[in-house]
Image 1 (cartoon, rainbow, N blue to C red):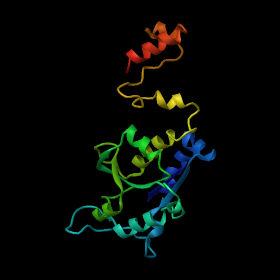
Image 2 (cartoon, helix red, strand yellow):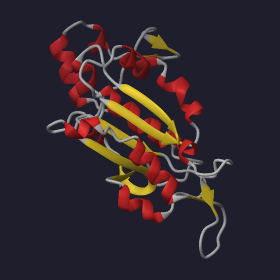
Image 3 (spheres, rainbow, N blue to C red):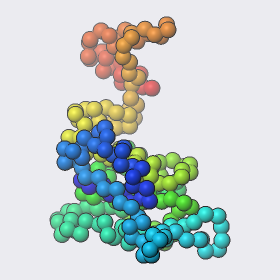
Image 4 (spheres, rainbow, N blue to C red):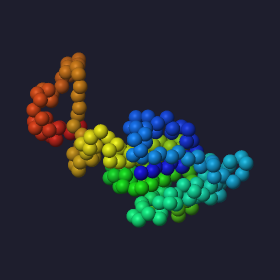
Length: 218
């Protein structure tokens, strides 16, 4: 699978995707992560990507022609010739459809996911004509779409086969099982300031532990 993030600040994302699970997944060849600077598709020598909004208002708006050019330039042209090739362009926006585990699972089945990260006061509304889906990680405003794009990509990467050491590690996480939340987890010391680890978890009876986990969600 390939994940392409279109952003004005690719360098801010590089350390995250080079580390931990995403970094290891890429080294194993399980995913290819591309961080693309939208400014590379600007037309002028100043690399201008935004302009004042029609009708007035505060802030600057990302230009539809430049963002669209970045999208089209990063589509996997060769992949389109493959049978059943699946590619999707996603825009991060607080007004979009809420991103859930089920959304991540659906995205993880794609061959190529392009995530468009907005910035400033947003992107010219006409970009919606070139987007497959608009998603939100919550109804709140961030400085830009880089954090939502990272959240989406990280969640998707974890669901790619063989990324996690054991399939169960993914299946047993919160929201991966319908109507079951993750049980509380403990480690040593067994008692801290009067707060103790439940005795059943220290007994070694895995059947009882499984039953306890199912009946004690957070």
